[in-house]
Length: 235
Image (cartoon, rainbow, N blue to C red; front, top):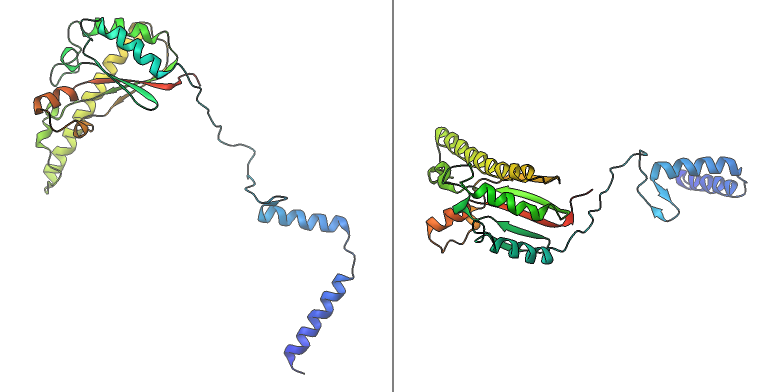
């Protein structure tokens, strides 16, 4: 008989001895409880047992007024306004995007509202005071505002890259200043709801139709979008 055979017989003997022994229930409960905590098992199998009683709260956004309905309301309101009648409205899946006409808002390279634009926006905001939808104001800038035609993504020198970074930042500041200017009119008109204000610089310029004349593309890039979401702003 080899050493391996002896080891197997001893192991079998101890297993049979354990099988015929009655384990105290309280000791078994303590052992199984510690194993459950260690391996994170419950009666249904594996589960994630939190290490803390605190967790990140979830937020469910409530639906607000239908954006399809609001599209009709905004169109009727804008077409009767001599200044904003050429504003464009796009109805997307979960939002409504109102692009205010650039020719009556800002001069090239400027963040100051043109004469008449502030009063027109002031009148238009009256519609927003009656809805509870989440709102976002996005400012845009055309590349020529900060001489972005000088930007060269393939610039090799450190100096060229430094200039490119500075130019990119200036278009962002300009677009943000335009959005803040429109947002200020919202506040001055008595709109008390919360909204987000963003500046996206000239980052969306490449998404404009490249088949239209360059001057028209730059005019379209010089705008402020008011985005109306289908969800409520009240959390």
